Image 1 (spheres, one colour):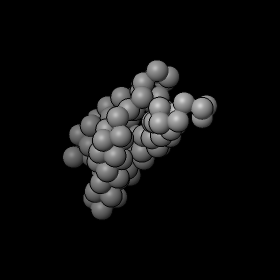
Image 2 (cartoon, helix red, strand yellow):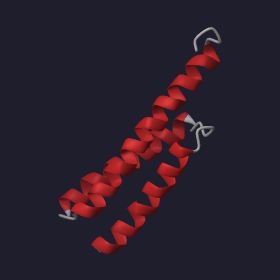
Image 3 (spheres, rainbow, N blue to C red):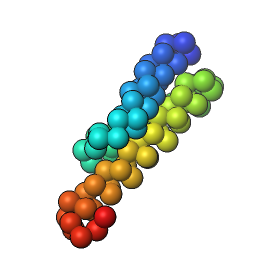
Image 4 (cartoon, rainbow, N blue to C red):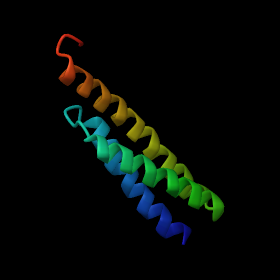
Length: 85
């Protein structure tokens, strides 16, 4: 089970890293919220199951989504107020 969780969460981490590297990618707010929720639940479940590797991989994805949340917030801020930049 730990291997399957690791594969699942490493794929999620790769996708999150790819979004961060793609500087033009601005995530919709719902995407950020849902991914943070999903990976937060994944960390909690992995820790409860005593699977540290999937928990670490999910934590890495959370860091990426927090970065994307910042990018989304800054983009929405400039969209609402064009003088901010």
